Image: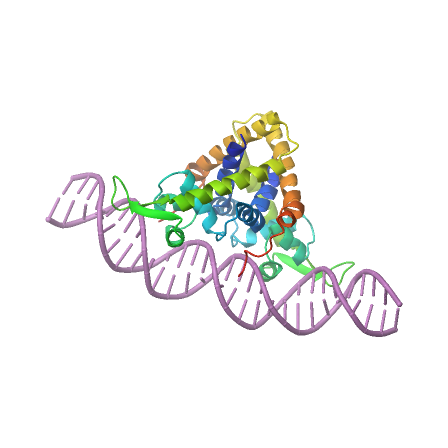
Length: 160
Length: 160
DNA sequence: CGATATATGTGCATTATACACGGATGTCGC
DNA sequence: GCGACATCCGTGTATAATGCACATATATCG
């Protein structure tokens, strides 16, 4: 049923949200990085130059929070800030070579982690799960961004 | 590939971790509850009587954090504490009728939410996703609890 | 040019969280 | 039965994270 899907999803989210996986990845990659900075660095590394507001939306945090954390990443020499190409208001964040190296090390460690967890899965099952999960993620994201606040008659629920 | 699975999973976790779904559910259920208390109440309601330590493990938080949050739930009249049946050290938390009603209201709202998101899915796809997700969740949980920390032998890198 | 909107950063308060410690209870070995 | 050790729980304390309000800079539109 739907309930089983929900429970499986919540259990999985619960595991992913624990500090251990991140910490394990960082240890495996041989780097030391604050747990809150970790997802931001990876996103910047993967999705290219990002402004603070855009990054905040991706991370689901307030832009002020992200602003401070990006400043930390900058002070650590992992990202650089630069003026936006077409908009001087944005100060895009891009990874430095050091940051890129760290992102790649994390990526390699992550591959090993997935390989360990999915060791006994068939290729077909892995592909199927990836496909359905992608579909669910896209639809859930679209639902959150478009559908969820309005139907209840609530106002923006975003930034009034 | 594995990377696609990872990205889909991270996107989905990102959506689930946003405040909007929880807030939407609470609005839809017609209740007002702190976002941090929300998952604890639901777990207590679903998994029967739970001690603080056990609940902390399920939630992936420190027992002291959970202890304070459960106290809040108690002061709100949503859960009750009582001595454990076989162990007087544990003070089991169980939902009150008011808490049970809230859990059920949330459950109904959640069903509607899932129905909206999964409107165009076939029953087969939903069942397949639930099955694979459950399998992944179980294996990931087992991996985190048994395999991940020991093999590296690392322990520091946390609080200097 | 003036009005409004967006991007960013900072001051401030609140909340969440973890670690350390002490008290209470359970378990085990003698 | 009793003492050593483990486990459960709560509290004191410190730190980190987060959000909101506000200020500044730039963009966009009329």
